[in-house]
Image (cartoon, rainbow, N blue to C red; front, side, top):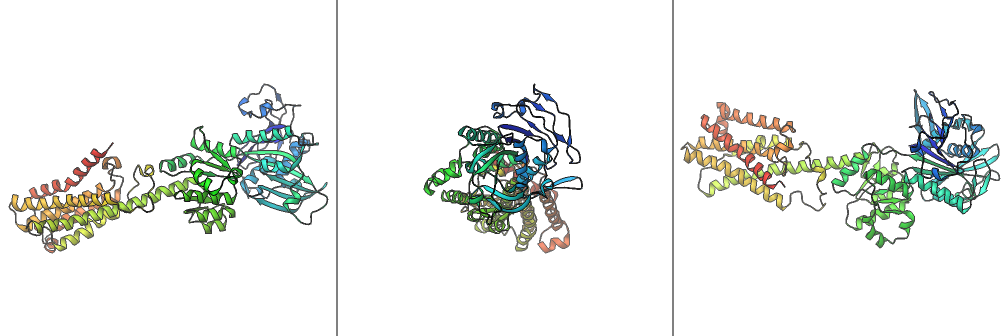
Amino acid sequence: MTVTRLFAGDRVFEVTGEGYEPIGEIREALGVRREGTWEGGDGQLSSVTDQLDHTSEHPSRLTPYASRLTSGDPLRLTPHASRLPSGLRELLTAAVLCNGATLRQEEGTWKMLGDPTEGALLVAAAKAALTIDRFASTYCFLGEVPFDPERKMMTIVRQTPDGSVAYVKGAPDVLLRHCTHRLAMDGTTEPITESIRTAILDANASFAHQALRVLAMAHRRLDGEPKVYRAQDLEDRLVFLGLAAMKDPLRPEAKAAVQACHDAGIRTVMITGDHQDTAVAIAEELRGVKESIRSLSGMELDRLSDEELVKTVDQVAVYARVSAEHKLRIVKAWKAQGAIVAMTGDGVNDAPAVKAADIGVAMGITGTDVTKEAADMVVTDDNFASIAAAVEEGRGIFDNIRKTIYFLLSCNVSEVLVMLFATLIGLPLPLLPIQILWMNLVTDGFPALALAVDPKSPDLMKQPPRRPEARLLDGGTLLAIGAQGVMLSAIALGAFAYSLYGLHQEVEQARAVAFTVMVVAQLVHAFNCRSERWSLFQVGLWTNRPLLLAFTLSLGTQVVVLTVPAVSTIFKVVPLPIEDWALMGAMGLLPFVIMEGIKLLRRP
């Protein structure tokens, strides 16, 4: 969070610099470039030359609103706060004194303790050599009225050399309603006329359209020290000092995360306390396109009944200047439409809405204990991208559970059917109980474990959300399991019958062939189960190394069963000639060939 614009008197100032390091420039953004600013490598502010260039080399830095302001006399800013224009100095003074954050330097790095917004105000003031240390001895803290989301303002009262003064900051459109006068650039106060009010609101709107968060500052000189600190007593008949507009850059991964949620069928709705224009501008920046985004303010929400909100809620993408009650109403309206609602929050006032949502999400860094207790999950890094990643991870886990069950059931169905079909058509038993037990433990077990850690499908975040009432295995999936069970059993039974009657082999030899064909077919079928839609060559043969290891291990143990006499005796199999090995390999690969052909035909 960095302050980039200041509005004091009737003038707009540009503030340069990034982060919490109090090094940068403050210059009037009126088409006149000022090099008489402050900078310093160690945080100590030192003077630079004062030069005026009335042919600005940086026209792109001018705000649309600034270009409409009256220039007045050019200002030569100096590093001495006492020589700052009075209006600008009082604005920055209020930014420091109505502040609960702390800016300090530790091991060469500037760090902020407290609210990031307040930290940004401290940094902006420090660039004009105004720090809390400057006021510590003469501007003593007396009391405060903390920020309230309903009031959208906060007040700190300090004892100054001129008596008690209430310093107030808050939402510009709200705070301005409590102001009767404005501080001009020369330090004089003047009544706020309709034209002045319009100019202030225009400046606020101009900043908001640039996706800047805007705070207004004001003060009021009191008659003595208050006995009781109440908002209604202190936040009235204020003198408006100006605006501070700050940029809260989107995290680089935010756009991709919002797009990923959109592709996954998740509707992202912004609910914020920011100005409506600021919220819409940020939403447009997130989407990457300038398009019509419907938004509602808290005041507009108040005019809607619950029934009207339910009808409207799915058409609104941005809610601005909302209270905790509004958030709760929005959650309930979405749930009334049958939606599955996830709600994020960090403050105490967010707890009811977080609790009411189907999935309450609290912030781990800035979140309060109350909100964390009300939430179902906590995002430890306060990053929206982590929520999108959690959705993808959850889908991946669920998908792998389905793959594992799909594989195990189709294999078990095939083992049952091969015995059933053989009995019905009068064939000898193609498999013995110990052989079936071996397949369940080894042939099925190892690949099933590998499928549980299968990498996520390439289209996982492009699939629509699953309804909560949807079954783990729906009718279509159960039908597919049955069909593939029939396929596996038919292949094994066909190999058994061909060996027994086509090659005229003994039952023990034919049984060994059927046993091995079933093992190979089931192992190959595990690769089919990695995706119901995508070919193995699209998913990637080498992307699941545990499955390759399971395949190799299971196939190797089957070779041991067939070739080591001591083990062959246990499983009642006999050595097989080379032509049987070729038959088993060809028949065992059939499930892969068949399923790849089906996937190819299904491909759009």
